[in-house]
Length: 368
Image (tube, rainbow, N blue to C red):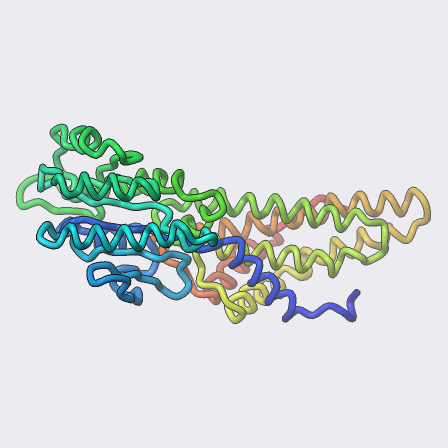
């Protein structure tokens, strides 16, 4: 097995699997000029998306924005102006209906945000018509932007736009009034959680990766990846064949790291994964691999000794994989919090992991 082992192929396969599992999510964001769509987008999603994303025209009034490394497309109506409303809605219906009929779910528009500024204190009949149309194809969330003083406006929006899934008030950036206290950011976590509930199950990881508001969502999805990897590692290590698991577990752990990286929204590619995984393995080699090798020697004992060796190695492999994965998640959490939700570089990830978790043998396992 050692002769067939190719680390470059392991990295390529792990990358391909991570990107496949993550998928790609599409969100339509609409609203009149001045409601603060760009500010909202940049506050919720990684990479200053509304400013640096590459846009392409879908219709005269609608553009699709993407950003390399972010598993998200934003469809922006570029201002829902009443003068051209019926033409805009007609063309928008063509887009969403065509995509909804595509057998590839990743081509659908999965959720819509209709933004209404609280300052306007009014829901236009045209906006009500738009919501009814969109709700035929996807969940719609009404986002009351620039929230300062509700005075019953949220309830009014919910009553008028009865087709929406929910209504959430947000203030995308901190606001300092001429007189009075500074108004903090509010409602973004509620918006992310509501959207997460509406995104199709197979694409939730893409949305989790693209958003930067809720780190806990990234952690929850990542811990599920760790649990699955630990189960696989334990199953391989349980086979009573000497040294069968020492190399076979490596692809599992590399795939786990790639999956966690993708879920946190790191812009993963072959170079990134090689840098991170290479740094982690270099720092963790003595800590992790040594214990696995010891347990493999027990498999040379005939009969019960061989079975016992496999059993102990299974527990060790699962525990090590779990510890490794949890330490990596904690490292990413620390870095993302420090960067206000924006992704760190691969060198920062590898260095932080080694400095924080591998110094002093912090990644531990049961004695084999």
